[in-house]
Structures are given as structure tokens and as C-alpha cells.
Length: 344
Image (cartoon, rainbow, N blue to C red; front, side, top):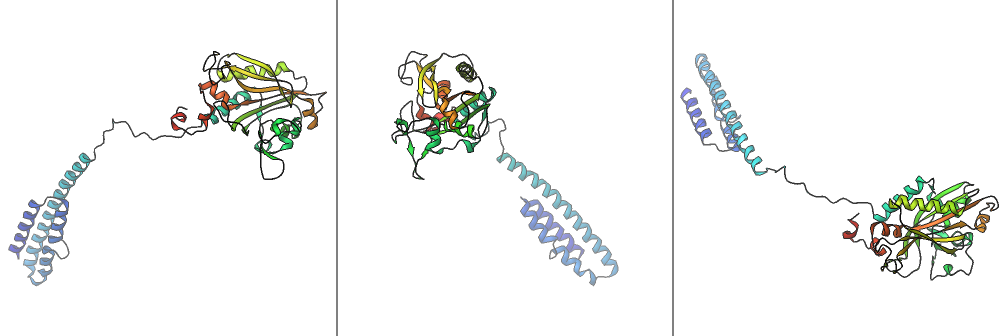
């Protein structure tokens, strides 16, 4: 039996020498050291030996088993390191290479321009009206009647205003001016608010106009408010928004809800006042309408025009963005062309 143990160890050592991977070691362990392995079969027969032979053969079996376990462990560590090195070499990463570019979404230029305008006007003391006071779907009372727009005014015609089929006299607002009526109905002077939002007009689409765009309405009502206050606020806003003084002009105009009324132009940034298709060759681009709140509008909301006066203005967000970023076509904001949008 002693010779048999030595022969088995010799065969196991030979198998270890020929082993080339960890799976080969697993087969050798199963063949010689498992419950059904050759060493275990010999140990089962120790009961048939004399006490002296049991001691000799048992000691030899344990010694050979330990030597084989140690050899297997050494081989296993050797193969594991070898296979790990091969795997690492195959999967090597060059950490000096640039990472993969993952495009990230950005705020739309109209949204960022709106936020910038709102922040500028807030710095001048204006607050934003709640959304409930600036709905996009309005009754014609808030869109026209309360704003002193006559029944026969062209703006009421379906060629200029989008009427809905929700109910009679329900429209998509054609300006954010209706928000000033809601604001004055829900607060007492002094009132200093702005209302940003979307507006809709049934107009022909071209480089300067779209039938869907964005406005910001401003309103200031208090005692002793003058047109000089209006000019001061708007000139300061333009200075803040453009970052430096920029040529502006106030042109006399007419709006049913303000008297006197004016339109404010800013020198065209595309042509520096020389004339181009964006400014229709005038060298100027209109950015807002403004004026002193008409006394009839104050009366419609229960404010005494003999005690209080105020001014209002409404500016086009797209127009201001076009001027600031030298964009020559308003339609670019709505075409969703990534080549345009990614610049912002």
C-alpha cells in the first residue's frame, strides 16, 4: 500500500507538471483529493491493516496529501496571476485618451432671454404676476374690452386674432396686456408687475414676424407717475440688457390702452443702422410698445385716474434676442435646427 501511495503521488506530480490552466488543476484535485479520489480510496482500506501499518501508511498518506495540496495551491496562484496579467493586458485602457463626449441639453435661447429680461426688470423693482393672472386663453373682455379696445377695432377681426371654439368670445391672447387687468383687479396701487408669456396673432410669417411669439408685459401704477419715469425705466432696462448704452428712439404711436403711446426702437445690430432685411432697411428694430395707462383702463378696474397714474409696456422677447445675438430671422427660434440651437 505504501508503494501504491508513492505511485499515486508520482502520477499526481506528473499531471501537475503537464497542467496549463486552473481548470486542469481542478481536474487533478478531483482525481486525487476528492471524496472519490485515489488517496481517499486508500484511506478507506486502512481499517484492514495492523496498528503499526495503519500508523505508517496513514502518516504517509497525510504527508503526501499535504504536499499535493501545497503544490496545487502554488500552481493555482501561478496560473491565476498569469491569467490575470493576460486579461489586464487585453483590457488595457489608455487613461490619457479623452473621454466620450455625451451631448447635454441646454436652455432654449427664448427661455434664457426671457429669464434674463425678467431678472433685469426685477432688479428695477418689478415682480412677476402669478400664472393665474396671465392666462393664454382669454375672454375678449380681458383681451380687448377692459383694455379700452373699441368694438370695431381691426385687432378684433379674425384676420388678426385667433378665436377658439371653446365658447363664444374666447380667444388666444394677442398680447400679454390682459395680465395688467388681472393684476389691477387683484391688488391696490402701488402696483409694479411684469407678465412674461406666449401670445398668438394671425399674421403672415416672415423674417420679422411669426404667428406665435413671446412678450413681457410691464405695469407700474402709483401716484404721480409720469412719462419721464417710463423713459427712465426703459432706458435703464436697455442698458442692463445689452450691457452698454445703445442708440434708442421713442416714436409717437397709438394703443387703445395707453395715452400718450410710443414705440421704442433699438438700432439694428446686424447693420449698425445702415439698413438690412431684418430692419427692412430702416436701421432700427422695434422692440416694444409703451405709454401711460389710459384713464378708461384704470376706471375699468376701479382705480381712480384722478388720484393714480401709471405706465405700461410690452416687449417682444424674440426681437430682443435677435438684437443681442445678431440673429437675422425670427423663424430660426422655432425651426428646432440643432445647428442653430447648439450655439446657445
